[in-house]
Image 1 (tube, rainbow, N blue to C red):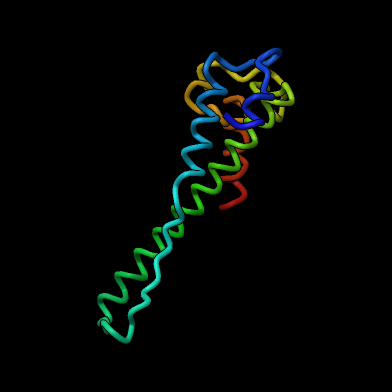
Image 2 (tube, rainbow, N blue to C red):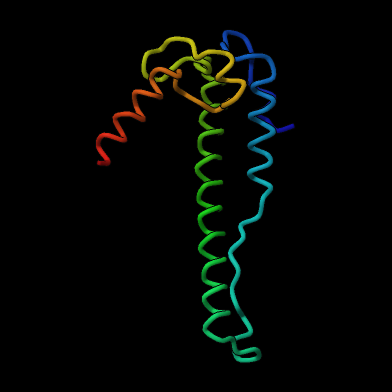
Length: 129
């Protein structure tokens, strides 16, 4: 168990039971996954044709995107753990109202209540079009 896990207190937190454990487990899982970038180091030994090269580039792009998504998820999970430590976990970052426990059970790292998240997504959609 890490020092951070030892310091975390559950008093004053508005999350459902088991939320912290799920967040810590998710963080450990994300940190244990190795990055998946591959390089073709044997170009001279095994020349590849254009189709193979296109396949390799496609796989590398997919792996890069997965690594990026994993990094974003790790930041969200780490943010939730930090909110837990500050005693603000389970409160909406916009309206400061408690986040519904059902929502926290499904998306433990969320920092927004459902109403505020929908409003943010609606605004994001409006600005992107």
